[in-house]
Image (cartoon, one colour):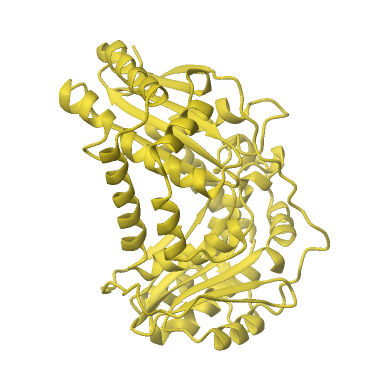
Amino acid sequence: MKYRSSTATKPISTSSLASPQKTTLPSGLRVVSENVPSAQSFALGAWIDVGSCDEEPQEYGMTHFIEHLVFRGTSSPQRKRSSLQIANAMESVGGYLNAFTTKDHTCYYSRALDAHFTRSLELLADMCVYPMFREADVEKERNIIIEEIKSLEDEPEEMINDYLDELLFGTSKKAHPYAHPISGTAETLSVMTKDDLAAFHARHYTADRIIIAASGNIDHESLVRSVETLFAESRPAPKPLRSIQAPKRRTASVRETSMPTQQMHLSLAALIPKMSDHDYYTLSALSIILGDGMSSRLNQVVREKHGLCYSIYSALSEIRESVIFSVYAGFEGVQREKVSGLIQKELRLILEKPVSKTELRRAKEQLKSSLIMGLESLSGRMTLLAKSELYLGRFESVEEKVAAIERVQESDILHLSQTYLREQDWHTVCVTPEA
């Protein structure tokens, strides 16, 4: 869901900034903020520690469904809003409002100029604490999400990720909670009632699972006082709800399916569980060397040298305590054997000998550049604050991150590859064009 209008902003200096601040309210709600004195705008997010992994089988898609519904109207005693009023609240002042759901969490966030901070905070609070679950809105959003699912089914690159999740996490009743699609299915969505959705919201949108994160020219103590007032009705859960084990590695498997597509789509994925911070930066460097960018090994060999595909890359997908390492290629069906063979060759090479010092230096520079440039936006800084709290429970400074990147060695990449990225560790999905 999103409502958007553009607002020009200038890069934020990453030097001479005060350390981030954190306050935990008696209810358990956490407030994290970073003051950027030079900023004339802000980034604000309400992060809820509930994602699709918290759903029971009959609830698949419910977290995402609620994310849609909160944009339909709020019932705060002071500020009742219709869907149009929610949209106008930010667009009328040149701001931006959006939301997303992941396997682990849900986020509602906004961007606007300083003068509209209170408006934005009130809006996000009302959406989180006082959403309306009206029958008519439930039916409208049900239809919209089902159409969204159908549109994803027309995108092989999107569907291939869902298929990989099934291979990585299982399909039986004992499958890991990460296995099912975030959007759910038409079958599960069709039987959800407004009472089901309201009950799920009340059970999971509790104060102890809410993080308010903000970056801009913001006074932390003033923000805390406002949050305490606006979220006064939000209570902690009577008992801990989340009890999700880290996913276990499964025996490598293969799935092949056909879709009405012009290209063949191939993706391989491996699960790296319970990663340390050092392993994460090591894997990030490897991903850059293998398939991130024009100078990466896969791009240079498969695309530039042999001209076999337009799109080929590697990527990391973070989930709590684990990372999915994947490789994707789209190509003409007749080239399948060549493309697959070249990819397998490159995957074997990372097991056989260390990457070169030149490759590792390039990867480190890219990682540092991506980190620092991302923090030149308030949205990037706000997101870092929230994710640090969600995943680490503490702040990790830019200096800490850069130092961790610099500590990665060629031998670390070789050891990690030989431990987690062997031939038997890769799950494979191939989407072929329908005959």
